[in-house]
Each structure stands twice: as C-alpha cells, then as structure tokens.
Image (cartoon, rainbow, N blue to C red; front, side, top):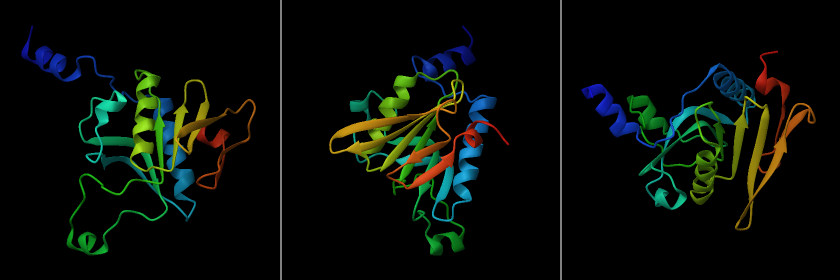
Length: 179
C-alpha cells in the first residue's frame, strides 16, 4: 500500500465525505443568492462554526469541536468592524447562525446530516434546512420545546419554501433551477 493510500485510509476511514456535485453546487448557490437579496439576512457559505461548547460525539459526529455548514444565515452577522478594519479574519466563528442549511451531496449519508442538525439545535441555531437536490425536496426543521419538527417542501406540490421561525418565503423552483 502506498503512502497516499495509507494517508487517505487514515483520514477517511469510515468517514462520510461531502463531495459536492453540480446539483449540490447549484442549489447552494441559488439559496445563498436568494437569501443575500433579502436585506434582513447575511448568508455565509462553508463557514466554520466553533462547536467546542458541546460534545459532538453525543450526536454521532466525528468532528471534535467544529461544524461547517453549507450555508449559514445571520440576522445580525458575526462581524467585528474593528478587527475587519485591521485585516483580521475569524477562522472559527463562535456566534451561531440563526439558520443553518445543509445540502445533501450524492456521497453523503442523510443520517449524518440529521445528526448534524440535532447538534446545531443544541448549539442554539433557531432553524435548519436539509436540501436534497437529487430528489428536489427541502425539509425545514424547527424546535417545539425539546422536540424537533420538520416540514417538507417539494416543487411538485409547493410553490414556496416557508420557514416560519425565520419568516422566510422562497420560491422553491428557484432553489433547484437558475431561471
């Protein structure tokens, strides 16, 4: 076995790898664009979130102290004007987003993303979406007390994605297509 194969086996052994596809990328881009155009929100793509305040292993996650969401949405962005002016950048953001959006890639296991959504709620995220581009379904998760509830949206039945917690209404067709 070569060094490269040993290295890959060590890092990726049993790990669910996010390998984005064209549909994944298009859905992520479209959602970010739609939310960026809503002045109430500041979206970030692939933002590293500091999850060191909880034990992620309780959710079956291999990550130790960091979660990376496909799209994070803030009502009040985690920006420090003084640090920004000095050129500093925050590698791992401590302020949790109001909305975390996960886009399922073809090589991911859906349960891994569901565990990640549980972790987001434990960290104080208000709403989570699971976007499944291959089947054109979006699940919007919220918390009702200690219980996580989901609403399912699909273009064959729905014209909009409705997130009542975040007061978001998006045309569902625009998530999966450019037009």
